[in-house]
Length: 366
Image 1: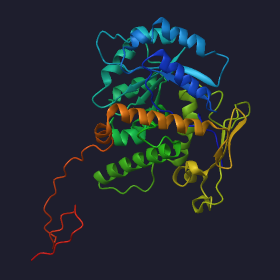
Image 2 (image 1 turned 180 degrees about the horizontal axis):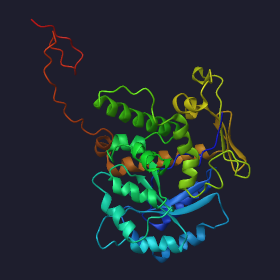
Image 3 (image 1 turned 90 degrees about the vertical axis):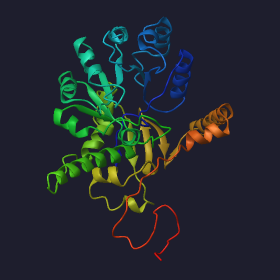
Image 4 (image 1 turned 135 degrees about the vertical axis):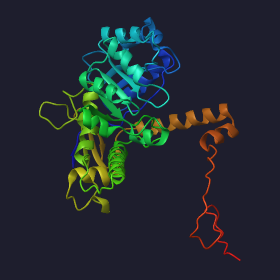
């Protein structure tokens, strides 16, 4: 099965607190065989300061050129809903530098409809904006996004686990909003688009079934199909990155960014009756046989070519050891294994034992 993804890997967030951090991020991307767009963002700083300063402009001019379609740049920042709209300056800088913007929108307890309204009132809702999550918005906000041609990046694995809101795919479908898929964090979630497609489709269908049950109905046909999420993971991602004319589909004249899914040793890879459904529900990254980026083979026979994986593994191991030494073992363990919330058990009138549901001992009544 041939597949054309927007990137070699799924997109995720990273924090760039200094230009030096950004330089290191670009170095890492250039050392990796792929087509990339760096979203420059610093969650700990004010975007109207770091996004308009001379250091950022020098970085953008030095590390990125319009003729290089293998490495692009966009700005990543959130709109706080401050009525003075301090983000206006960084939106203006993005427009002046011809940079796309990605922003967390509709995140429960963080960014809301006021953020969308301010962007609308100041004229910064355009097709060059990607709204990540958009999971806690009103109908009015979805209508504004649709009317201005923006796209929404759904991170279902993150939204289902971290509480930004329920993946809003049914709202996006209803309003005709363009969709792409993302990972949000490669540290917490799977960092693979197969899982992103599967979780997105499952979340949409689960909500649709529950809504039908609430009406005392049985749903026989789901609105969202496997081919829809495959399109979101490929062409949708390319459009969200401003690369829709270059990649995202197997089309004459586009760049040869291709994924071949083939695994003759896997019992899950046959029979192949419904290719889209097979990609979403049966395939996994271990089934990726060959990857081409810009016509260059970077993975073959299920193995990455070159030494980039070994270099990355060593760098990650060194980083983890640094974190552990700085945090201390107790804090490190607490961060990895947070306290489990207490579950209040209810009495079961049909039980015939004192089984407590939380131990391995089965205690018969006396």
